[in-house]
Amino acid sequence: MLSLKPSGIVLICLAVGVLALILGGLVVRLVPFFGYKNAKKKIDLSLKDAEIKANQVIKSAQLEGRAAALELQKQADKEIKERKDQVLELEKAIISREQAIDVRDLMVKKREEQLENENQQLDKKAQDLVKQKDELDAKINSIITELEKVAGMTSAEAKKELFDRVQEKSAHEVAAYLKEREEQAKEEADDAARDILALTIERFSQEVASERTISVVALPNDEMKGRIIGREGRNIRTIEQLTGVDLIIDDTPEVITVSCFNPIRREIAKRSLEALIKDGRIQPGRIEELVEKATQEVKESIRKAGEEALFKLNLPRMNKDLVEMIGRLKYRTSYGQNALAHSIEVAHLAGIMAAEIGADQQLAKRAGLLHDLGKAIDYEVEGSHVELGARYAKKYGENEVVINAIEAHHGEKPATTIIANLVIAADTLSAARPGARSETLDTYVKRIEQLENISKEFEGVNQAYAIQSGREIRVMVVPEKVDDVQAYNIARQIKDKIENELVYPGQIKVTVIRETRVSEIAK
Image 1 (cartoon, rainbow, N blue to C red):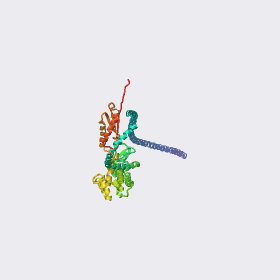
Image 2: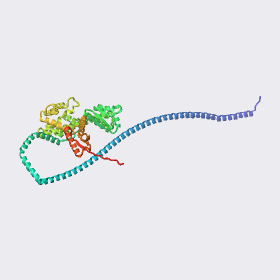
Image 3: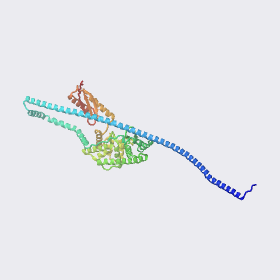
Image 4: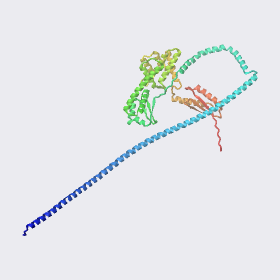
């Protein structure tokens, strides 16, 4: 075996130590390097995962954004379509209204041209008449001059001679004339009665309101119809249930029709609708509030109308229920004549006639005011308005004279007092006054046909047209068969025949037109 020296061992130990140090240094340097590579691998993996997740989030957000954009696009397209439909409807309404205005303008222009032509014809006729009058005056003067020459005396001398002879001849006729006048005095009693009636009518005249079983409510626009109907018709059902009327909503632009036989319900519904339209908040709760408010307003209006009627007639206090019934007549009509206005008019007429003959004026006015009392409730209670009026007058302790006037004003019972007869006469006068009551369609058409047929009966008449609701008849004659003088005669004859054969209110103007047209063609 080899034996080492201590110095060799030291060297070996030193070499081993150096080698260990070298290896330790290498290990110390290599350990961080391998750790860094591992960390970098982990970081790269995390970045790749984050990038994958980010791409997934971006793709998901893009999909959701596209879906939201599509939904917004659909909503926008729907709103645009609705707006376009509304604009088209408005354009149609405007075009329709413009067409109606154009038609009216055309009619007005034609009417103005027609009136201008008529005025020119009238001016020409007036000039012809003046010319004819001058010619006639000249002929009369010449005839008088010739007569004076033939008779050998002046016109003044001829007048005196004629007067003397007439005076002598009339002397023995004076007695017969007086006797005849005495007989005529008895016949003039009817004329005196008519004069009293005419004086009564002259002293009192009143316009009559024309109302029917329907009322029309104006709308600001046609969109309001849909709001009044409401969702699934809940608004219109609420209005009809609360007021008891029927609402008619049709194609008529910007109007709603309220239909009901009860005029008070109709008035309440009309006021409620007008208040709703003005307020704008159309829903069941608000409808109930406004209907209740309108009901109270109508009740107050009825009370005031009854009190005003008593005040106008200067009548003493009356039972408050009777006053309310009188006020209800304000919303009732008969043949287009307002019942309250008619009752006040009858009261005035009866009072004036009573004053003329010395009867009780206050009692006559009271009877006239209450004669149609039953019309305030005859649409709610069974029975005629005469029966109902008499029943309620008795219930509230009215005078027997008033009750008899109510019962007798339509002839159902005999009139036992002079005041009852006065009320009958006043009722007839008020109803027969021209324009007080409207005609039925059949009566109107029949009268128009009769006017035209009467005019066509005369020789030389070509056409005849009744215009202005039968208040004027235009007659066209054949100019070759009828001259100007015959045209005047035809107009007079037609007028006489109309007066003898027809019954009509007011006046009828007869116009005979004779027109000659001459035309030539220049070539």
